Amino acid sequence: MALVTKTVYSEPGYDYRQWAIHVRGTIITEVAKMERMIDDYIAKHFCHYRKRQIELIEVIISTKHLTFQSKADIVRFIVVRRGDATKEQATKIHNALLQENKIAYHRNLLAHAELDTSREAVNIFKADKQTVRFIKFSANSTKPVVYDKKEVIRLLELIQAVIFFFNDVKHNEYQKRLKGQRHTPLSPSASTKRKKTS
Image (cartoon, rainbow, N blue to C red; front, side, top):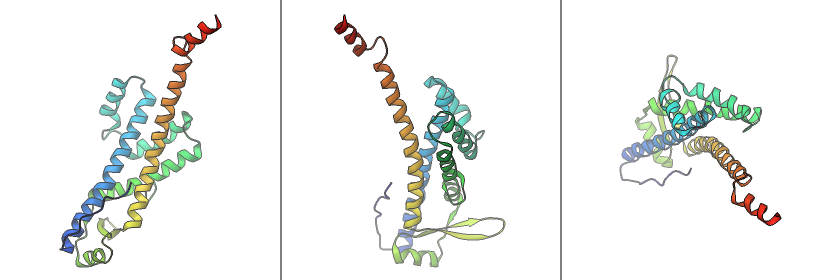
């Protein structure tokens, strides 16, 4: 997903903060969209009726009872069991979600990290108008995490790859249902064929 063109103001510190809000918001929004698709996929595997699927999502899947890591573990198992992916493809999806410097790591960091508003960070932004830094606090060290244009695009492409996978699965299921409907005894095509042969 391409980033929306930013509005450039006269004060670099203001531009920097606005661009940081945009970067943070875009990535978190895309991850939320991806996670809802994962929730829906899990629910559809265990329930055939939409009302029950929504119940399962509301009561269990989208709550604190099921962590992002747990969802990734479940998906890795289900996609292979259902034949939607090979073991290798399932591992790639799982890694994209959970490995260091991948989706879950950055989602958590951007949701909680403080924006680095130091003079140094603003000066870096002034040079290219696209690099922002967030401060990551940890027990061992506190360090800035840089999000330049290349890193933001890498993350969005990673998120989109997962979204596209689940979109493809959804599309394939729809096509299978259509194919199945065409071959049912009560479908118009089947009754037409019977009339022609009789």
